[in-house]
Length: 206
Image (tube, rainbow, N blue to C red; front, side):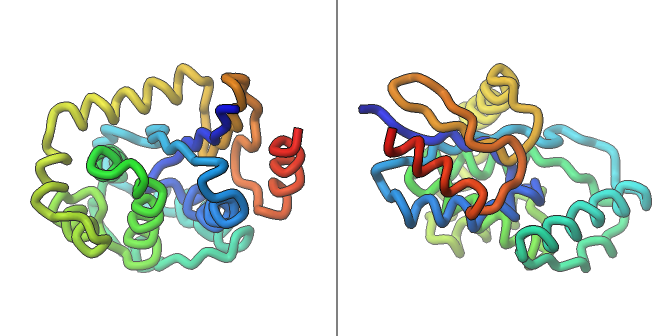
């Protein structure tokens, strides 16, 4: 029986950061019997408009809600940045670059990117910072940079975005259970582990 989860996320999606403990619980509960296949959904790829005060207020409100709902920590010093552009494409491409080097590390590297951005206030739109994060994670820095700059990585990242759109994904996190090519929605949007656990256990047992 072929059984796995499709997880659509973004390294700069605060609700996905809130969802990180849930994916950790799924891995803890099911391990290799239920692999999680991670795809980049494309939150704001290619955005070129710097954040203004209104955008900062909207994003801060999201972060506060995520913190309240999930307990995940945030460094609100982020909002002291001036003229910064919330382009999610570099971080997504970094995830795909890491995935191409070692597919099994994808979910753990997503958490590393989340932690860097949300709790350490690091600029994950900059390649040198992304290389540093990858090296701290344990990937070879030069191999990662080469993978990041490879045109095939860009194409694969865009293919992820297309896959998410074609699957009807309009928000993140999105988790879909697949068994023998039949898909079942687990959640579209944030839910905690206590909410997801019973339905997932029932699906696994069916």
